Length: 144
Image (cartoon, rainbow, N blue to C red; front, side, top):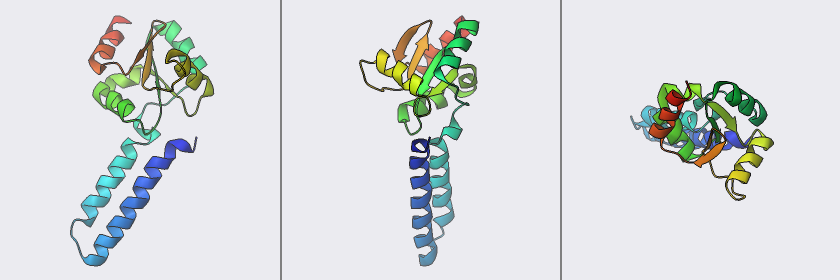
């Protein structure tokens, strides 16, 4: 659980240190830079993603409603890209954080030859590694 917060915490600490140095020098850019670091920390934190569920629960929900399951981890730029490009559609998917759920990590390793490559999206029982967001959005409309 703590691994997911390492990068956002480092971004906040580094941003605070750089901002403090700029404030001491009297630079007017200090506030803008701090806001940038806070934004980056938020985007790389678990808060930027829909609430994760366990792999077993996600699979059960997917079996019921036919929606894809997305396996992800905090700090992954490809997961963030997928989340941002999906926009509001991301809330319709079932998200599993592999750093919080060992069963989810095992599922990803089984689908990727032992690697924890994310995002791995399971649609109708078939895994897809780092799929195109538009393709995934199309899978959502097909599952309705």
